[in-house]
Length: 139
Image (tube, rainbow, N blue to C red; front, side, top):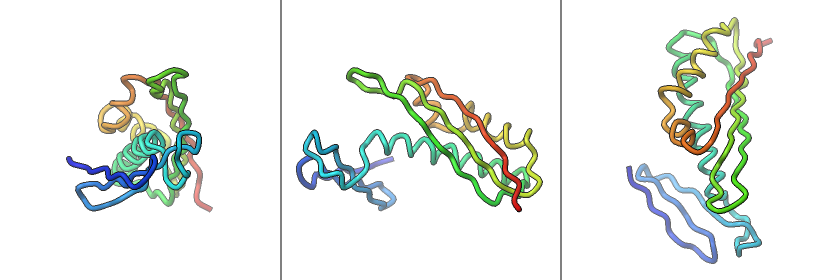
C-alpha cells in the first residue's frame, strides 16, 4: 500500500491514496491551521470505524440478514501527554433491519473485533476497545 502527503500551506496537507482518492488534512488554529480539513487522529478513528463497518456488513450479508441501515458511533480518549495515543475507544453499532437475529449481529461484531478488522486490532495495542450494539426493527 502506498500513500502520498503533499504540503499545501501552514499545517495543511492533501493526502492521496494509491487508489487516487484525496483528503484534506489540517491542524487546529492554535498550531497554525485554518480548520479546513480533518485532523490526522480523526482520520485514524474514522479509518477504524470504516474498517469494522465493512467487516460487519459483509458478515451480515453472508449471513443473509436483511440489514437496511448500519451506523457506528465512536468515542475515543487520548493520552494527556505526548505521544497522545488513543487510550480508550468505544464503538457503538446501530443496526437496522427486518427480523435481525441478535446472535448473528453480535457474532459479526465480535469477528470483526477479534479477527478481521486490522485497524481495530492495531489500535488495540495502545487502546482499550469496547463495543456494544443496538438492533432496530425497520418499520
